Length: 281
Image 1: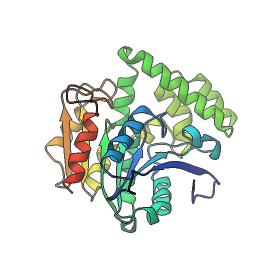
Image 2: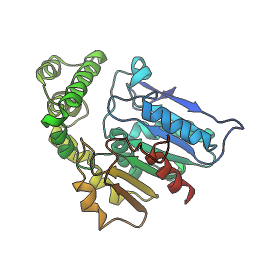
Image 3: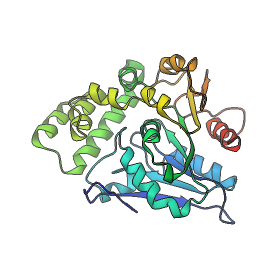
Image 4: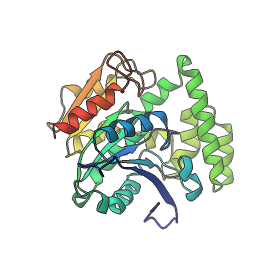
């Protein structure tokens, strides 16, 4: 459990996985995406992958996520980087060789917002993101398109359920949330005002990963697929020709959203790419 320093009394939870022999190298911190948690399939797969290679792994639940929901009144969002500082601070004794952060989808947005703000004493050696929306407004619009109707409905339902379960909504926020029918509507009604933003557009702009990438100083790997059904590749294409020297972009034709399964074998290709990046540090 991780106590948070904002005075809320909220706590976060993570699960530390250790390979036989104790492991070595940087502690790998896995950060899940929207409505995910420490036991999401891609988090489990990534943890098993790194454990097989002798690395310890922290599967982190963001504030209010999954099994940690009962320990927090608040809820995570793209700009919740102070929570990451608190977690890494608490884990410093467990990470004598530093941290390597991997953020998936919205967890990648959290990672990109955190990296420019992390104190050097935390010794974050490097990071990677997988299927992360660099332009949140563009991603929200794409998710609301007809071909994503099933996924969109699921996200909206799960987000409204999660916010209502918090028990701290004002009558106005609760009423606006009840009326919301899209992910943009949910962020307008709840995510933005609950975290100090006047509306979803302002929240998206303030936390957009495309603005954070140039501010990152540690080695960073961005992995994305052009056929991701939720997150268009255009922001990655715009960055491609002007990347800082510490940033690598792997933009593939196929891979879907946090997918990358294929003929190469049972392990997700994005995990293999992260491993190669980590070995080259």
